[in-house]
Length: 442
Ligand SMILES: Cc1ncc(COP(=O)(O)O)c(C=O)c1O
Image 1 (cartoon, rainbow, N blue to C red):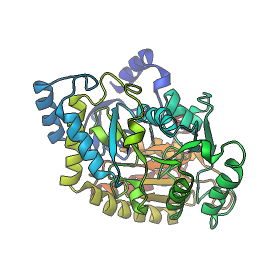
Image 2: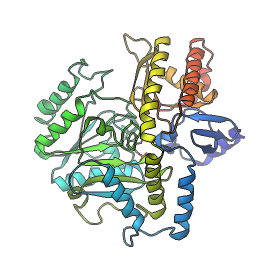
Image 3: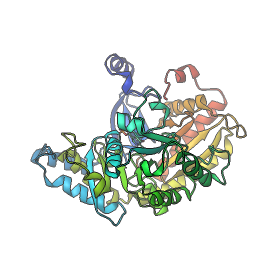
Image 4: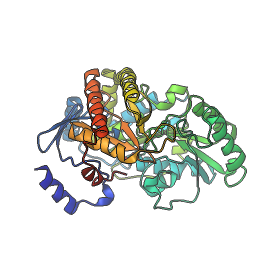
């Protein structure tokens, strides 16, 4: 059944819309589990690229959606607003730090929200340039791809006003040293970039992922984000956090920057915000989002159905204490992965915060040569054994663990045992590499 479906899908669905790691054909999903069209059940450590933060098919969202659709299925909030969007904006302003006037912009995807940043921040600051980080993934529309520094967007030129600097990667330090990593990256910015191609007085904003996710689930050194914030304040540059993947509780706090008491000028949200429905947001200083009327708008932005789903999702995160669960079970997950690391030489690094975890595979721990094929093989084998994981990273060698925030300790134990089995099968050359190669991932 799955094979027939996948063939039919391949006939009509654009390859530009695909990134595949194994041949799954989905039938249904509930909580942390996905059922395939063959009736097999999988524990899902992907949450569909971190969208299913509250898990799949939450009954509270389901009944809210029905209620909302029946009372008001649609109004364009651009021209005839209703209260749901206002309640959602008020809630987002409340959970976002910053003791200054804020407003909210709403869209459909992380990409259109980052386009909001690409367009509005330079306009509001009356400065032309933006700075972002190599390895960052901000989206696939022109503005958001211009901000991105990931190989996934490298075929496109994008807008020429964005300068990209190295991300502080403690495992692969861009300037060779881990102990002086923060100093070296910020010195490069101030001594080289600011003094040559991108003067600070022409720089409107710096956009960063608090954990660089698609770049390889990289956690910066403890002092990096606070010092970046200080630098931004010194030059009056807006600091923007892209929280599309790791925001809304995943790291064990509402936002990744909350771990460092950093207060951004703008926060970008998406993915898990809609409990599975497409909705994104930018929460930012009023003067950024009010810089012009009708200059970044989409007809269905903040529509009542998606807004209602989002409001209910945020309430569920609080009622079910999912942020606490992400923190506690995230720590447990990391500990168990560290034990696996002791067992398998290929696991070069295990890192993360809460339930945003990366497992980086290398050919050997001294050269740190990326083990991309082995990473693909582990993801493939996990799938065969009933566990869904994707990989990320500029070297395609980091297993990304971003499950629904509802995952239990027992499920983590199950995940660890399947990962263990997969590594052992790889060691014993029991994985069919011809099958693995058919799914190139990225
Ligand atoms: C940090 C980050 N920002 C933005 C995006 C783009 O979001 P979307 O695919 O919803 O446009 C992604 C997607 O992976 C992301 O991880």
